[in-house]
Image 1 (cartoon, rainbow, N blue to C red):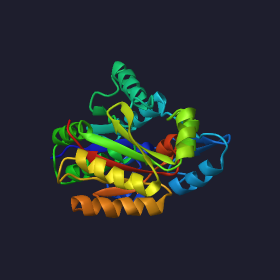
Image 2: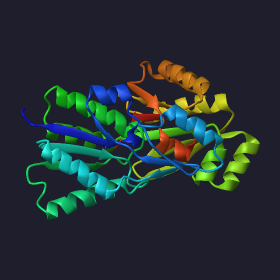
Image 3: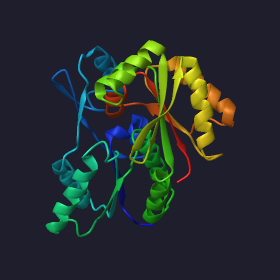
Image 4: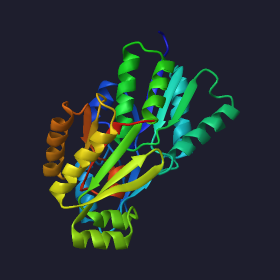
Length: 288
């Protein structure tokens, strides 16, 4: 197939740098504001550098959306390069205006007849972090192997309709500051040593369990998530700074289901700005 394609996503996808380069995925960075200073995610601020800054900052870091103007520049660049199909997969529209800005940019350029020779496929992942980062890497593999753009779009639609993201929090203070849980729930959680298991599916977020103690919440998460996932499907793991708990989960989940994670990465600025630097997250395929 002679289609000249390009894969575009945002830095909230948390795709490791080596995979970004290997599969030529075009990653548009978010800008991050910490203590009055602006950084570009993945360019002048790595995940681990962000963790240190976020833990020291008295304020919640802010992630700026990618503007329609930046998307217009990107789409015009693709058209000038002779790209015939640009597949654009972006962070959950429920948490960012970025997707809507991409749609606005495409509409503006279409109205000016500047995209006549290029198909731009803009997809709301309804996901965060490697929930869509993994899918972009898989899409790149499929296209490199000669799969059609349509088959890749079908794969992405199926994946995003099926994934469940689970976040286990080990420090509720950041979630309280970011508004992800109430101050009252955070206070009671800290007093009682409760750890939440949070489920994110499509645009819905809910606490499915509250468990007392770090080891107990890992065991509970393994039991709960393994019961949700479709057997023999890939699972994906997201790390931050809680290495001991991360490794314990991976070991326990491997023992429970019998095979290793298909993909893992570190949480970047977009997720960590809201959930904190002391979480682990697991993405699995569940029922649609």
